[in-house]
Length: 511
Ligand code: 5AD
Ligand code: SF4
Image 1: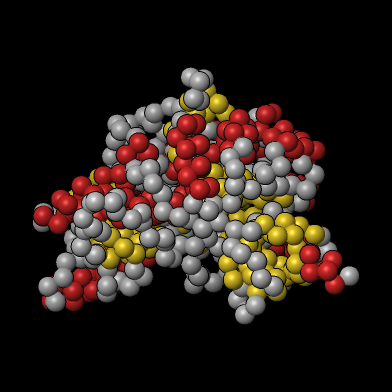
Image 2: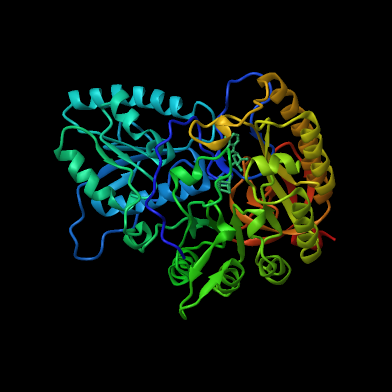
């Protein structure tokens, strides 16, 4: 574990991309190829979050207030929104989805999409009207902006939207109750975008509201890699690993609350190196082995990883821990050694290929997914061809692909050889076509297999259940099974956004 350095840079940027797959990518209007994910995967809930813990016995409940949290971006933001709800629950805040009803609105923001901050400002414009209308009825509304836009553009938010009461960076969520109290008293915004000396995880409530069968657990934050194009090291700070005991305690609690699948989160999750209960430092493989022992935890995942941090033990863990799902998101960004060097990725294409081979040796059914950037400064068509060759060589089950967009303040923004927008479009289209084909191939290859599906809810049609496969594909099946059950199903067809299945036991009963 390392404490974050307190260094911090404010960037006027157009969209940091937390190094975690986006949980929700709202529709974009841009014509031509879009930065997109071509995954077939369950979108994580960014809507209503579960109600917070009930007040302790003997403690008078606070007057009912309503809280609306809107979440953009990565799964770490989804996790953070849940924790903000947890910390505000004892103050009497219960969730709502209506801005008109909300006594407090938190916009938990992300920079992954271009113009993301503009979308935040237009949402803030609408909230201004709501706040005015509520004030006319004598009701106060606290408006907070959290997340990476808040971290990077705090001053601009308060200048352009003075009706915002609180601006808080990702490291200061534990101070929310105090900020709410100050905001309710003070005129002018309360701004907390420091990297404080205390650890926010130590100050968040231990009790976590039930998450459902799939739970996120942040084990690591920040990044020291400083890829040329990326703002994460500036917005989320230096790498920090939570101690193992705290993670294990949280996981036990999640399991007790009904979680069957736990996804460990971190911007650089496989760089996790946390203090162990016996005073040593564990790496991720050891942590996974310990987590696998927790009763009730049927499935483990972790995201997002860096190729340089895939150590031998972690590769072996994929073959040795049955509950570690055969799925790994391992961004490569480019297949050209020249571009990888310009990106400051610290590895060559060959290392990635070797890792993929070794992982598949350890776990032959492993689904590999990745991130790509096309049009990084200096990328020639020969470099792009090298990326296409790497994609063909590996065979991905899904991928996120992006056109490079300059983030002011990052090294790449001042690197020579910008690639024309039209050329980026052409490359992105070509790359996405291959990735989509590979994804379809992967999904079709699953048809006919009997696999364990974790039931997450009811399906779109009556009499159906919805779940997720070991490879994170959404699955729909006719039949009944309780949420949280792991049910053996036969995959029947690959549909555009899901797989259809039948319950395997019904098959055998019918046979
Ligand atoms: N331009 C385009 N894509 C980016 N990403 C990060 N920064 C940028 C940028 N400046 C992508 C990377 C990363 C993913 C989360 O977002 O592929 O892995
Ligand atoms: Fe950003 Fe690179 Fe760190 Fe990922 S490894 S968060 S792309 S700096």
